[in-house]
Every structure is written in structure tokens, then in C-alpha cells.
Image (cartoon, rainbow, N blue to C red; front, side):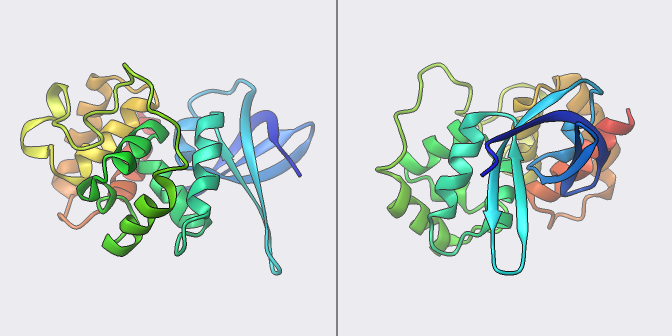
Length: 208
């Protein structure tokens, strides 16, 4: 099984990147593909090698924590690879850990593809399997508290608040996120998921 790949991103799609590893292009599905297109340097993705009867797929993550959380999510009944990927696109591992340990259904049901029953299964199946949350990690806003900075207020309970928190976790600055939201807010219909808004924002950020 492949544990990690190291190479250069040569192509980006909404759901995956193509990673050039010694002149071989690997299609790797990843939570936030456009975030990986910000650099032409060699990157390393930690891989989950998913094998089915009709397909072999690679799912890639920038950290071991994301890789580990992805695999734990797959253990939950009703969560497949695509749903798990969507969950990680909208919530960092420490935020998910906190929400599960605190049984925060409000946060969990805002994640793409997660309804109330699935959120309850996440809590039941994973609460005792997740390690203690490290102190000092800035996940409180994502887990349900008001977000800090300009995105708080009217947007705090919206899909954009969750998407913004996840984008901030990728290293985007408040000013960049404010510009992206300013470009998108007039196009928002009100029924977008955090994952959908995140993809739109990443496209906007990528375009500059």
C-alpha cells in the first residue's frame, strides 16, 4: 500500500489534483485541491489507498492527523470516502475531535453529507477512539463558538463561517478571506454547503 507520495502538482480539479512523481501522474482526491495549487514546489501527501472491486483510488492529505481522521471516519457506518473527504474539507481534525467529544450535533450536522443520524453514529463510534484534544489549538470557533475576526457576527452560524474557519486553517489570512467573501457573497443563494462555499472561495483565492 502507498503511505505517502512526494511530487509536484501539475493539474487541479475541484475534487482532485494530479501529482507528478518522477514523471508518473497520480490522481489524488484531496479535501481542498485548490489550496495545493498555490505553490510549484514539491509537496508531500499522506495517502489512503482505497481499493474496491471496481476501482482503486488514492486520497491524499497534507498531515498525518488528516489521514488518521479520514480513516476513522470510514469506520463509521454510512460514511464513505467521498463523504469523509467532504467532512475534512470543512473541518480540521482537532475541530472534529472536539465536536465529537463534546457531542456537538449542531456543528457536526453542518458538515457536508452529515445528517443527524450520521452525526449521532459519529459520536457513538468515535468518541472513545479519539485522543485528547491538545490544549491551545484554535478550534473553538469551528466547534461552535463565535469565530474571531471579521467573519463573526451575521455569518457566525452560516456555512461560510465553517468554510472560513477551514480556510484559515490552511493558512489564508483574514484579508484574503474577506476579499474572497466580498467577491462571492452576492452569488450566494443561501443553501450552499460549507464544502461548496469553500471550493468557490478557493477558486477565487487561486485566481487572486
